Image (cartoon, rainbow, N blue to C red; front, side, top):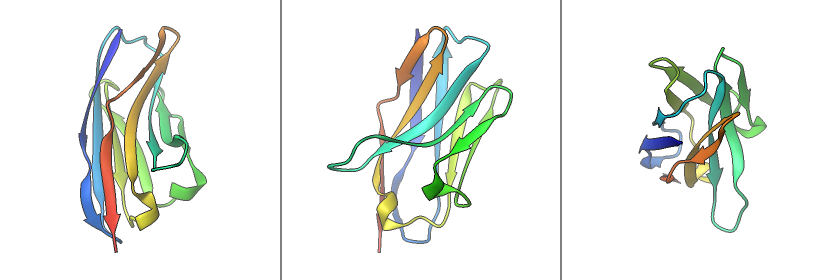
Length: 115
């Protein structure tokens, strides 16, 4: 079983930056994908970005050029660097982990972007 601990998030003005981080621990398969999803009020949860061990990255169109996903510490920590934030980026951001052994969600962290 994998346990995820998220940090980061908060309140920022439009145009600002924030960084989220998520550390995985437990039974981690050598090949896995870690990423970030978000869910705004009244909307479905959607993929923001993901990154597999080995470096393959995937971004949602709405964050390309603004957000960067990376992994460090033997791929156990995933970061989401968010720049040029917009009010429509306001949502709860969830860390996600999946491997052949299953998937795990983080508890979520609130990101609020104000005008």
